Length: 403
Image (cartoon, rainbow, N blue to C red; front, top):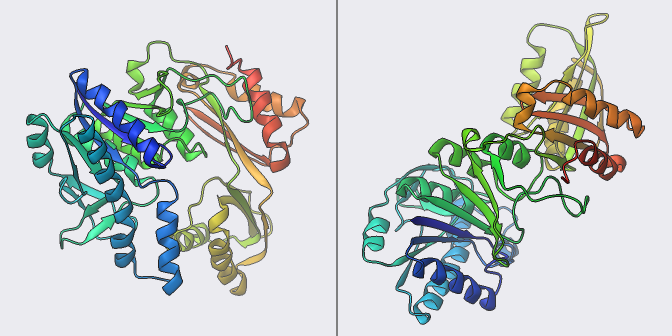
């Protein structure tokens, strides 16, 4: 088998952990597999480098930040390669450039355009373990670029796709994907398998095990992903095509996103194109809008509510202020004391009553639902943040996810 293994910052957090990773990689190689390893920077390293840059400038040039930040992953790759060599494993480290990762020109959040796997393939044919610095590539001008937060996951999935790998293993500090956050609900159960679409919902709804762009790419390239712990030999969770899951559960899990703020616009002038103008302006300001509710027009005005990530609330306010000053919005208000709780499962497509049960649970717990959004495999509800953990535990129990 050809296996791509990715190890995150906590997995390579210090020299002892890098040594443990080397032993795990060596074991995989000695079992007869071809292995490509993708590594993140050691935990804390990226933040340290950002701090160095901010000592000189609060707004450093993005191209210079890419040059700086990409060094963290190269350090880890080199150290792991050296550790593997000491274990008698023929290994070689390489940067994203040498691995053939070509990106666009957007510094600090570049997107992978293509990968030329020739160098990696030749080294694999020689029996070497290839250790690639994640999170980085190179643009057409030869400048170093980085892929943004979670970029090493992207590197691993893209490399697995380019090489036609049999499996891409994402090693983290958790044992897999759970039916909900075990810190909130101790009865949460680790899932054996989950579909790409369900994992995309979990990732977009606040689950931090995998970056959603990496799941999108895995689905596009048909890469089988396994997320598992680098500190345990326990089997992880396979993320794969829906058709590879024989028994599709009605509900796979409950997701919680505390990183949400509600924006309420009252007395919005009811003219054709007003919603387009507001939301295009928000998009131009790089504000990611999630749930949207618009009420029926009364007296030539309407109300619009929507949610945004808390970190983008100030940018959203700046956009709204422009419309308020023009007289197209009568008043605006904001609420950060909310959260979004979601029920996710591919089985919803063919079963009725899933939403009714969720709403009944909220009613029984006397939890008011402020906003509702649905898709084929998801029901999301915005509620007051103080009820977040109660809602998660109650829904988890109602759908009997511990069984």
